[in-house]
Image 1: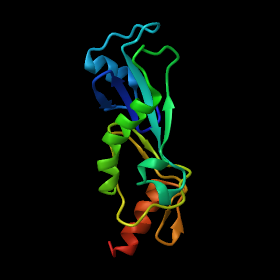
Image 2 (image 1 turned 90 degrees about the vertical axis):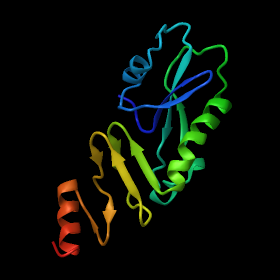
Image 3 (image 1 turned 120 degrees about the vertical axis):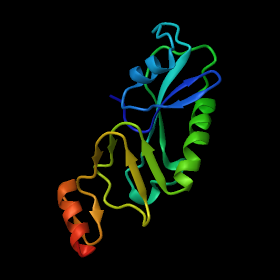
Image 4 (image 1 turned 45 degrees about the vertical axis):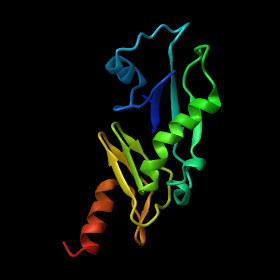
Length: 149
């Protein structure tokens, strides 16, 4: 399982993972996974732990998730390609991933933030409004109460 926001990058294309698995994305794309001479790289752009920085693409940490690298690989070029994909989404105040989105550890989000996950959305400990909630159920109940539902 990979941490959001995950990518499979080839020499000519950048693919944001549709699930939490680089392997699933590699299979979906029909790439051959030859561990010792790959023609792609598995990378991740790690969400900043400071909620105020969550929509600043320059604050995302780049992480390589494999040992063997293709001859064309350049960390700077691959990071820049991932940021080119990530920046428009973040510029709209959105984070959207196909798999799970784990934001545990954040204490706040900027106003108007839009979060979307194809799997689970983990928000434990996130401050919403005036409270800190231990679970999504507690957060939903507090939001419904605040909205008069």
